[in-house]
Image 1 (cartoon, rainbow, N blue to C red):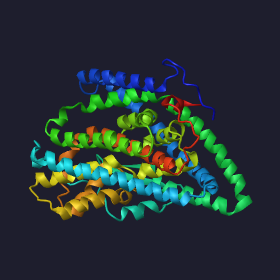
Image 2 (image 1 turned 180 degrees about the vertical axis):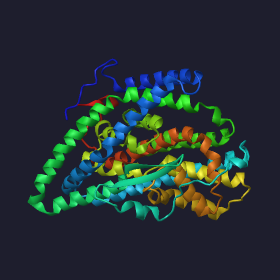
Image 3 (image 1 turned 30 degrees about the vertical axis):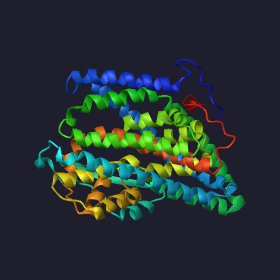
Length: 435
């Protein structure tokens, strides 16, 4: 696909358009919040934001499948494919380990569980919990399309929703790509068809991405109108600890990693900005996946053959915000709130669960599931999860943004260390909207 020239001014500067959308959304959100519950403006923003995220999620299956099949075929030309996979998983673990240590320190120093103003009566056990068997259950496809179904009861009526398990899609796509390569000439027509389909899907992605400023305005406006900041009053210290941890990882740890590998933090954040801001307002790593993959390849210069593997994998297992910082601070909060002393053994378990737990909960979604896995491993009351649900949406915005930033960072670092970025121009974020 030919890259568009990021001309000066609003029309050519996609990043500026997104920033303006963010500002407009904030203003509309505060205005809608002042109008009270159920007003037309809030409902319109909620509807537009939901449609935008649905459009992105609809593109996830074809993007993941076609990109990974093409990636498997392209990896034939790379002699170090196995080393790239090992390096990717290694950097996932290194950054998660650092993030969880920061979470533990903040939890111990700030003592959010001792400063909480919530009533213990608000505690209730979560309906969904994580377990160490979820990874095995989630990685094996239940059907050829990676479809999952969930049924919920509301007012006596059952509602069933279908969705895609991205981890299973990865497994299916890797198997298809490997089989197509293994059969030799007989697989070439399939690979050619896949390349054509991938080009079509990328064009669709380009059209949807152009709607990002509108989607951003609607999503952030809906978040402000719906949640505001009132809920932070009783759990302010906990929210502060979480956001301090997220900021430390995003703006201290990640820049240090980039500088240590000869990369520019400024250029990285300029390139990853569209994905990070969309993750913040949409609160969905999977919904942001198409944009994350696009900026990783087009704005950061990571080879598409490698990015097609690393970014979808990261979207399901690389969650420094949801699976490292948050469960560490939240587990310490629950222990402090209930007056349960934690020893060195428990802190080591927090580290172990946070580094390995992303894989264990990859078949499921949400930081709450990861938190239940941590609490159950430590033997802490699962009812503690209910104490934190009031401000979870506000925390989830920052958690998801850090998740996505890390999902773009690791492929960039691994590519740099493998010499795959040599002689590749790293354009600005504006080129992400290339045709």
